[in-house]
Length: 122
Image (cartoon, rainbow, N blue to C red; front, top):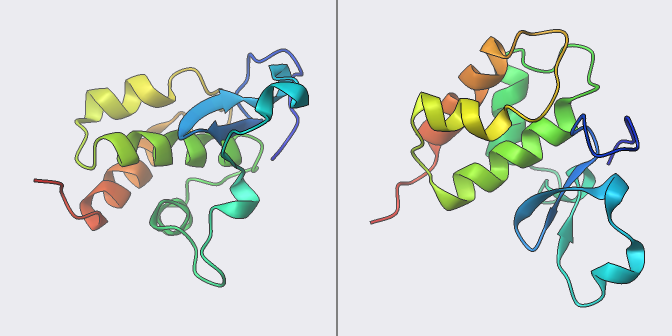
């Protein structure tokens, strides 16, 4: 995970807390007892990257890397809830994560590409 603003505003420190994107910089460690926490470092399965991580690399949505961990984990949480989100849902989901490099276009494309690799739930 990455420390950014320390105020919960930028999203670079996002982790998945019980499957939900959460700003880790504003959560006390004592509050985590019994919780499942997934960081960007724990997302890959051994030597295989998660499909969202792969998609971000393939689509060039990584730029400087400041926002990348938070964007990937936010996208992962969205795709875990809805494997085929609309473009508007993708934009709404990542809108609270700040990115100064890409203008979000490549990030949205990466999430859309990752959603097409997921098997839709029936």
